[in-house]
Length: 246
Image (cartoon, rainbow, N blue to C red):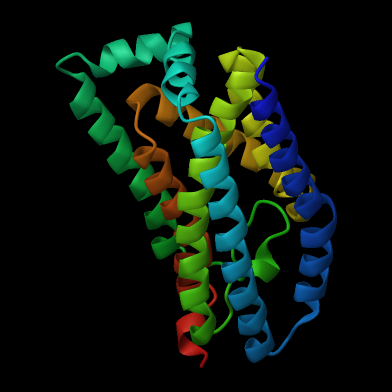
């Protein structure tokens, strides 16, 4: 067992659990009471700065600490039968066109219902306790966009790239490594309630599958950012009329 990797893994898990179980839950409860957009923007700004520092720092630490293990963990996980079958299909003549078609359908499914239903829904659809998090005024929208991109980049680098490689260095088991990272990703959304945790775990599993099938961390980063931009920018504009409220 790699003791240095084990120590670093313990620090990363400890920091993430501390933020999820205590700090973020308390801050979100206070945030939900805010009515002033100036006060909300102040909190958004602090979350953006702190999140970038913490997540980028943890991402960098895990990637550097487990650099040699990243390709080994990826290769081991790609041997799983469903992943190997998907990769084999992707390598066929029909693989890329089918993948592009699926990407177009997913993108349309994320965007078009919001556009078409913008005049028939009284409130934004949400899975988990996230409605208070959505921007409500024009000045909050840039923070929503920045938080979305920040989460897409750094959460994927941490939970799909660095952390699984670090866990693989400790356990030697790719399944345990990626499953543990996915569950921890869900726990990180504890402030959203049980449904939010479950949905985050499911999304995390989708991001893992995309990373393993394509072999590129860029694919889940882009999808993660798009999903968050849908929630933090498109929905507030189309359903919440945030752009019309200065």
